Amino acid sequence: MKAARAVLEYLKNSGVQYIFGIPAGSVNAFFDELNDMSELTPIVTKHEGAASYMAAAYAKYAKHLSVCIGCSGPGGTNLVTGAANAMREHLPVLFLTGAVPVNTIGLNASQELDAEPIFRPVTKYSVTVKESKDLLKEIVKASEIALSGVPGPVHIAIPIDVQHETVPNLEIPAPPKGTAIIPELDTIKSVAEELLARRSGYILVGQGVRNSVDQLLELAEILNWPIITTPQAKGYIPEDHPLLVGVFGFAGHEAASQLIADGDGQVLFIVGSSLGETATNNYNLNLTKNRFSIQMDFDQSVFNRKYDIDLPVLGDIHISLILLIEELRAKGLARTSFKVTENKEIYEASTGEYNTKNVLLTIQKYLPASTRYAIDIGEFMSYVIHHMKVVDYDTFNINVHFGAMGSGIGSAIGSKLAEPERPVACITGDGCFFMHGMEILTAKEYHLPILFIVMNNARLGMVYHGHALQFKRTHPSFEQHPINISAMASAMDIPSFQVTELQDLNQDMLHNLMNLNGPAVLEVVLTDNNTPPMGDRVKFLSSFGK
Image 1 (cartoon, rainbow, N blue to C red):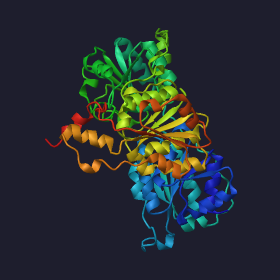
Image 2 (image 1 turned 45 degrees about the horizontal axis):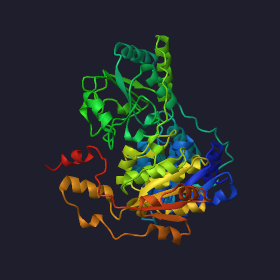
Image 3 (image 1 turned 30 degrees about the vertical axis):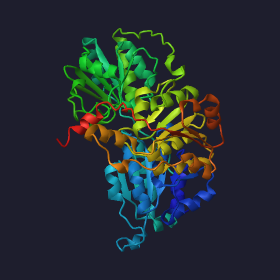
Image 4 (image 1 turned 90 degrees about the horizontal axis):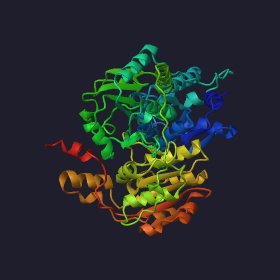
């Protein structure tokens, strides 16, 4: 069989269902073989960058290795941003790029580029395979690296001729198995002892807790400690849980900031956060000031970066939490019984000003509670973090710390493919839409019922407000002539509805848009001159250049 076919057989046996990307000459062997492999579906996108965001979201929600492919040269470089995004989120994505024939390397062949060193800083492993006999074993090696320890993306560049070469009848290896990092029991015992010695504290939850929410809540209820989430972790802790204080960091809540600044908690217990800029409100030193700090993570590199950590706990977060809970129970602590009361605010109609906050709350009121929101990058993102409610599990996909505009559009598609039964809505802006908005055609072609909510304010909103606050002026280029995005959707034969006032939003209309045999566009024409709830982000930027 061809070397490319051997790779695809291995991926098929490993449970891969989709291959995200764009066909081209330098990867044509793979796409030709897909004609005879109905188990693998190519998701052909409009841009490789969007394909990479789809693959990342699919890996996150399918909890499985994901595959993304691009041609040599520009196709590969278009994937680099997505690889960096997957690296930041610890997502196992196998990036495959074509390469020029081996005997033309260095001869300025069409679309020639040495992609291996370009991908190296944004992946766990990057290699070029120049002999067909080595291809399958490198694919196996890379897949295992992607899933093991700290999950993350990997990259393999494959010359055209290597893909087409015939390899001997190979035995397809067993599917890759990830290996979890097991925490040291002595460390877990030390954590339990420190928690018992200091009976007050706060739990700061990052996105690393996404597969361990039940265990996190059990720990919080055993300790009876307040829970604070990072912006990236919004969506994991139910809004109506009595211990939830709110979001700390970018677009966070005053209650969380006040607790960190003035609270008397003796411990800060950090679970699954790398304590980056957006998670710490611009590296606020009050987080660990006069507090014993415990940080639990599977990534050793996050310890002692900006903050000195008194007790780092290296290990799989799920396993670490289970072991810690068992240790605390053995020491006599029991789970507190909390009566969770339904949060009524979200079910009440938003009235008054036609602004971003009221639009988002009204939309959430009418959409199914189980809707997952893929949030793009823009001023609306700060309103989502600050005002929208968490009414079901794993509700929001927010990539604020890498902040790639347009990533939310691809993420919505990846999420829907991973969990077809779950309603998905993407909240994006006109700036992001003009980058990757054509991917709504991809959603149409694969019959994916996703609601794309486009906040159309005819400007780069976050940039506009940021400059207005920092410099007291904005450049005219931040604004543009208004574009009718609903008309663009209509030209693509995609259902749409244009909102120009709050009263336009109603349950029947939203229900109809969410229940189609494909995507729909809800265009919200709104220029909101209120200052977005960005927290201290502008103060941080303003500290430079003085």
